[in-house]
Image (cartoon, rainbow, N blue to C red; front, side, top):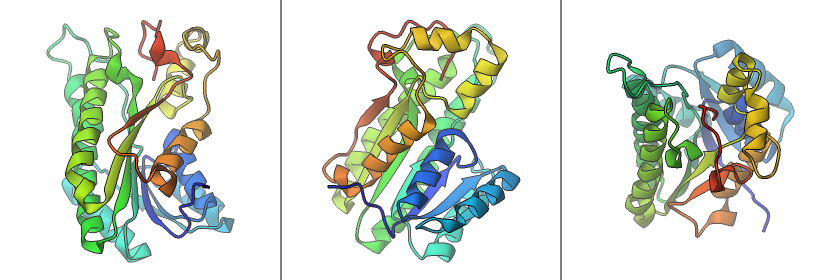
Length: 261
């Protein structure tokens, strides 16, 4: 069975660059009506214009989803554009180092809020709408293999990713009676926006990530997008509460000692 999402109404957060943008592009190409959400208004407008010739529709929403009111506005904008919400992809992530010895550093709190709390709020808002529609839906969270790793300067991001994984499982159980599936894609060795920035600052990091990845290369954002498409589609109709690693095997024997997600 082909992964079909044609005609579905989709929200993709973090859609201005990296994996979020790849997901939005793939979903629109497959006939979905997608609301691209991000804080980068210029990039969103540029992408929506480029997507105009695809099978599905694309509209943009600009706002800071760390604010509760913005989440409400996001849902209202989606309903205004497409009348419903069928699929949510939480692709907005923030990856920052956090010093495990420095209590004055707020990196831990930032990671927890951005990557766990905000995603929970958006899941709750989307699920509420899906339940009112009475025909189910799908939620895909973008997590990381950092949830299983212990890299000294990634304490905040690792703990936040683990929290998001557990949130995915817990919401899968809670939402299952309403036919809403909740899964996650755990990224590792994927050329995301954050990893691209890290490589630009550390000329050795590219080769180190490749060496730590059994498949022997860094994956493309499109490859993570394909996994999100599968989990959001009816091909995964009996899959919920699962964390699918897209990492070229890196999580099997991760040799990285640096933050690289």
